[in-house]
Image (tube, rainbow, N blue to C red; front, side, top):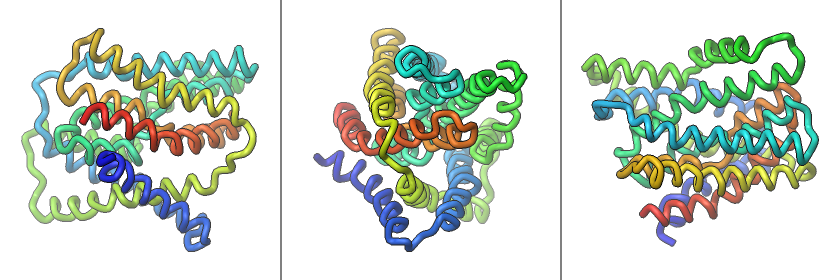
Length: 310
């Protein structure tokens, strides 16, 4: 109960306030978009930059940690593809959204607040490692399959290359890379600059949660429910269980690496699932319902995972 009250409850409480602000028309679409832009372009990148610049890096990258997480993610991605193709008879582009919905965690808007609150500073490095690879790998894969499915004359390899270059212009990725550069170079952030970064980064978590709640309030929840329910099960149950199996019995990981990997896998589907579906007109209804339902159900699943690792 303490996990629910002290960690998960406040996170979803701030999200609920964001949703309420939209429902009461205190915040309109332009306001929500402004909040999201502030979070993604300023607050979160600065938070990640400062956290990584000041983190204590291990001598070697924990490849077993990354393999545990992303092998599990790719497995449920493939399961989502199969679900879209063989059960619901969807197009290849739609299948990519099914796969993305099953594996693409909300690493930033919910992942950072939950992991940093639950596990403290020790969670910084493993969390940032997942974030650094998460978008480039899964977004490139999804976008490439969608483009091939749409018959745009673009090869999968070409699309992955294009998306990868786009990701290098992503402020969040830039923040991670700059923070890593500062750390590896042995440089420290100058005092006044660090204070600005501390203030700006401090706004990241509450603003991100408020913006996410406001965004979810606009999602319709009728129609396309059966596939969204199955994808929610893959995301919230199969993904974390599979990651735990790979991390502990298979690779023998210990310490903070295990709870971070499993908890991140238990995160709800990220907003990018819906954004991809809407942008490419590929199963946008399924994407919206999956994002909404996983956020609702994760209140229970995340509480369970955090309780098991306390």
